[in-house]
Length: 105
Image (tube, rainbow, N blue to C red):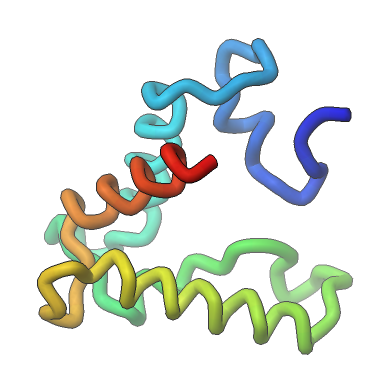
């Protein structure tokens, strides 16, 4: 059956074995963090986190209601990752979140 087509699974699975390792997830998460951290301070503001759009872009064909739900879920993930409640997600908090999602999967 394989992974859903609307996920980055194939990009994360760099060895192409159909399974994700923690090493592959770490490499992917590092890249995502770097793309979001626009000022390179190793911390993400909510604005930085939300600025990198996941899923279909402005020219995509996704429905607006679903995109709004996905953005709300993304904002909720930010709050969960902000374990020290300082309004920012540090690199360590971001990576811990990636590890938690990996373990849950």
